Image 1: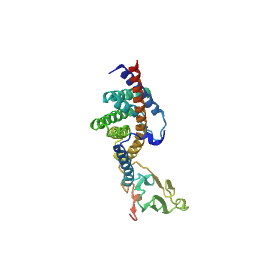
Image 2: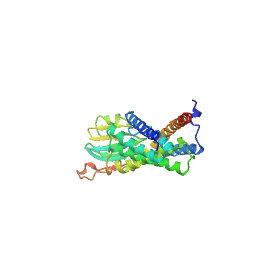
Image 3: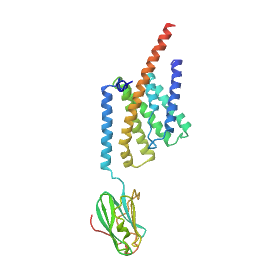
Image 4: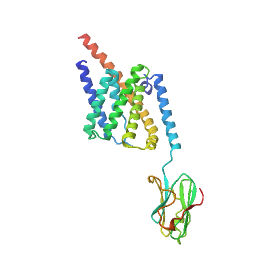
Length: 177
Length: 142
């Protein structure tokens, strides 16, 4: 791991924490409805540096952001930890069995889907033991997740393109020196 | 930047995944609405005791006996009204159909409320808690 990469990982973690914290301040019509903006960072980390970096950033983000917002070890923390880890692993799984099958947008959709599935399972087993309430809300959550997942995927795609461009520029400058 | 540029790198699998997810969640929403009840119930109390807890979806006519006599309650098209009451001013009948809230008949001590009543387990359709013969209930139909 090069020093430059370490800087970038630290930077990505900081971005993820900022987005996560920002998101928890946004008022939403339904309390647990979130945009999942931090997933943009996770996806970029996964595509640029691989699963170990992506999962590290996810863990750093969930832990620190919950400390900042005062929800550490609370229900919201457990839900976002479970959702974050599951979604990162699911995106990695799809990426590693067939790289190139899905673009960042498709990967983001997979991530959003598994994030929601994990959270619904956790919510059912830990907090709301009413299966009819979970069943009623699941399709709505997955529908919203698909929409926000698409938006996040588009943003990730744009950022990835720009980052790759910037990388080439840096490499060219290094060569010419 | 136009809209096409945003979706430039998408693969066929992306689009299939998107359509499948939208389709599944949409049909899920419709399916769940059909299968699961709305959860709204009509609760009828006589003399402070819950007597009936009925789903608002099912049309039926129910009669309960209060201190003054028989009160007949009709549930139809998710609405409730009192059709017959022994009280003298018939305020409860004049209130007509209600979709939410309550009808109260003070003389006959009948209270009907529509809402998400969370009795668990649901109250049986008649009161077995031996208060004497006041709660002799019989359903007219349904």
